[in-house]
Image (cartoon, rainbow, N blue to C red; front, side):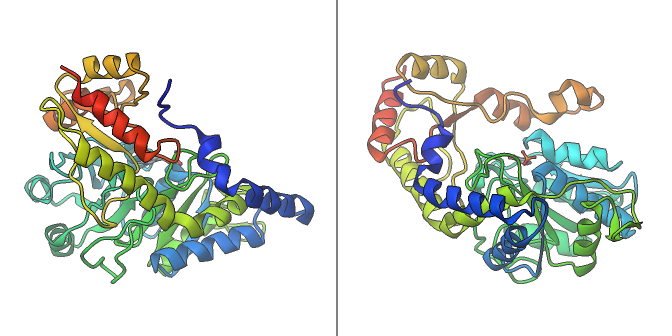
Amino acid sequence: MKYPFLDLATVNAPYLEQIKAAVNRVIDSGRYVGGAEVETLERNLCELTGAPHCVAVSNGLDALRMILRGYLELGRLRKGDKVMVPSNTYIASVLAITDCGLEPLFVEPSIETLNIDPQKAIAAYDERVKAIMPVHLYGRVAWDDEFVGFVKEKDLIVIEDNAQAIGAESDCDGIYGSRQAGALGDAGAFSFYPTKNIGAFGDAGAVVTHDNELASVVRALANYGSDRRYHNIYEGWNCRLDPVQAAVLNVKIPHVKEENALRREIARVYDTQINNPDVKKPMFVDNDTMVWHQYVIMSAKRDELRAYLSANGVATDIHYPEPPHRQPCYSRYAALSLPLADKISREALSLPISRCTSLQDAASIAEIINLFR
Ligand SMILES: *Cc1c(COP(=O)(O)O)cnc(C)c1O
């Protein structure tokens, strides 16, 4: 492919010397679980988000699971409670909910933002709903005055799936004042899967929270449920982050603003130059409420467009080809009517947006798209 979708070696190239040095320091330290790099990562994420607590963990799904399990252990959620979640999210959001014995209540998105539509959340609410999981999908912050009004009125626990929006900033206050994605609600889950805006060299994640009690429970849950050595207060897991991944992330996290800005410039080229009537572009905003984890266009002719782009050297991807309620493991939800999630899965197409795509490449890709009939 002349225009690759993503190549992680290229993405990491600017940081490679520093990363190798940092990983060598971990190797030389003789400490391979926990330790200084992990603590530094937790501090870096508190500083970035303005939240007082962070627990570095194994991956984004585990971060979500531990937040929900933590609220169960604290008695703030009970098995069978409903958790609102967008119908068009990545499966991991829903897996965390059902794994904890909670019930997902799928809420359809706004077709403009592709995030939970607060009006639809209000309409879908019932007394069994105790929490809501906004997902900042494709990097766009799912947070506005209407959403905040709703969660405050219903006193819902707000758990952000912030796997795709590190460094994003809302233009209205979070529940605790911070405007940073991941620290808008009660607790936020981060993923550092290698393809995310800030990616590790393997799986990695974090829980960020304003809740002192939750932070302690999550820290224990990630470490066999122990509050001190050989003393187990929960039936926990081993979901710790290793210091090699933390060392990689500590090199990259200080550059999150630059990384996100680079993505925005590519998005700007697509936004100004794509003008094919069969293609709907994502809403462009010239601020940090969107950090462009993906640039997702929609087209009723998606599959033909994708084949055409491929034939012209442009690699694309689909996020996501099947919504959660269409997955075989969730056949119990297959009868739900979620037409927008279905439509998005049929029409969404992700264009290359990373360090692998120059602004000139983006302009050429736009030109190729404009010639599609
Ligand atoms: C990547 C992702 C996750 C899961 O994170 P992992 O680190 O891969 O477990 C969860 N939710 C969303 C929206 C994601 O994009």
